[in-house]
Structures are given as C-alpha cells and as structure tokens.
Image (cartoon, rainbow, N blue to C red; front, side, top):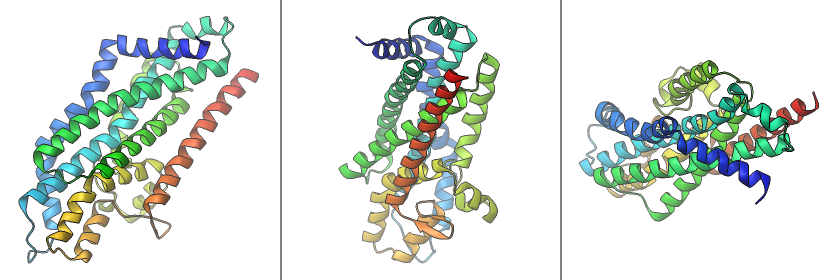
Amino acid sequence: MSTTSILIKRNIKLFFKDKGMFFTALITPVILLVLYATFLGNVYRDSLTAGIPESIELSKSVIDGLVGSQLISSILAVSCVTVAFCSNFLMVQDKATDVIKDFKTSPVKPSTLSISYYIATLVSTLIICLVAATVCLIYSATVGWYMSLSDILYLLLDIVLLALFGTALSSVINFFLSTQGQIGAVGTIVSSGYGFICGAYMPISSFSAGLQKVISFLPGTYGTSLVRNHTMRGALAEMQTQGIPVEVINELKSALDLNLELLGQQVSISSMYLILITAIVILITVFILLNRYKKTK
C-alpha cells in the first residue's frame, strides 16, 4: 500500500473515529431538514403562491412538491460545503497538536500529505452528503415526488461537484489556520454565512440589485442553482402540464434562482457547470501552489 493510501485511510478513520465531529457533520443536514420543514416550509409556500396570479389554480400536490424540492435543494447545496469544512478540520488539528511536525520529520513528501488531506476530506464529505441526499429524497417522496431518474443522476453529479468545490475551498482557507480557536471561528462563519451568499437560505432575487451583482460572481451561487434546477424540474414540468402559462413558470424560475444572470446575460445550465468546474480547478491549483511555495520557502 502506498504512503498516500495509508495517509488517506488514516485521515478518514480519524474523522469517523471522532464521534463529536462525525455526528455533528452527519446530523446537521437532518436538523436543517427538520428546521426548514417546520419553520420555513410555510414561508416558502406563501412566497411561492404569492408569485402565482390568483386566476391560476395549482394543485396542492404540485405546490407541496415545489416547496419540498426547494427545501432539499437548499439543504444539499449548503451541506456539501459546510460538511467539507468540518471534514477538513483534521488538517488544522494536526497543526494545532504538532502532529504535522512529525510528518515533516518523516520521509513523507509535503505534496503527498496535502493530497491525502484533500482526498480524505472529499471521501468523508461525499459519504455524509450522499446519506443526507438519501434522507432528503425520502422526504421529497413523502410530500410530493416529481423527480425522474435523470433528475436524480444530475443531482448526484451536482453533489459530487459541490463536494469537490467545498473540499477545494476549505483546503485553501484551512491552509492558513493553525489553532483550535481559528477552527471554531471559521466554522461558525461558514455555517452561518455560506447559506446566505450562495442563495440557499434566501433567493438571490430578494436581495438588492447591487448585492445580486456581487453574488453573481460567486461560484457557489451556481452550484445552488444547479441543485435547485434538478430537484424542481419535474414539479415545474407538471405545472406546465396542468396548463400554467410558460410566462408564469419562467417568472417563478427567476424568483427561485433557477434562472441566473451574469453581467446582464442569462446563464445556461451548461455554463453553470463550466463556472463551477473552473472554480474547482482554480482552487485546487491555488492549494497546490500554496503547498509548493511553503515547501520552497
């Protein structure tokens, strides 16, 4: 077994062995689902129905399906990034406990160590997020199921990409952290703030025009929109089947951030994937360069 494989296995084991960290990362999406369904479900429902003209009747099952899809898209979009930060805190803990110094005195290359942290974080994040996705899909099935097999497959792709993005982003940020206090501070900021700036907690369309322009340059925004497009596509298609005008559906898509604009131009689904993948490549490149610079410094 290679050194990289041994270190990846070690990092994954330590993450799942830490019951507090693992339980927190695993239970957070479930808690969010309960909170969303309990407190935000009616808010989403009222906001949704307010955007539909009174002359148009929409079945309760479709409304429930739309609200449920919006809820799970918000949870999954946030979880893929926040769980990645939680999983990647092991890298900072090794610095805080001086374990990293032991690695540096061993024959292990810095690049090998960095790769092991990244892959271990990615694997741990994917495991937890796929469990969360299963719970969310079960919830969606109970309130109103309109997703097709292709929607689920695209959703899984979105989760993988967001996990890659979250792991890369957390790797770059955590590179500069070295104490337990810094871990707590960053964890609090990410868990409370990311959902707002990526459009998960509140639609970007509800923000001011200036803030919308700023947020449109953040890659996480497009990750959220991709998840939302694929969880809500079936319910929106059912709306059209029930005779809802296309204009009303398009307005609803814009209000829920399914249609996003960048520099005044609407961003297609393929362009959203391109933006997210480009951000992943850039962040991974930055992480590699940071480790290379530190090695030669």
